[in-house]
Length: 76
Image (tube, rainbow, N blue to C red):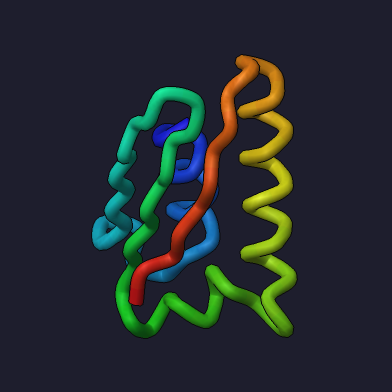
């Protein structure tokens, strides 16, 4: 999941080298924290949060396939 989010984020931003992804594993849920450059924050969130919602939808679908719940947190 971590690699998937990193791949998507790097494709969207102007500064792909500043994309950082951390994963906190739980028993049934994992929290994925995404950190990008300040200039790229708007590109990750998108208009009215549409891009962020789309990334979360992709993450949910991939997580369902491995029968685990994942949550995406975008860190400023």
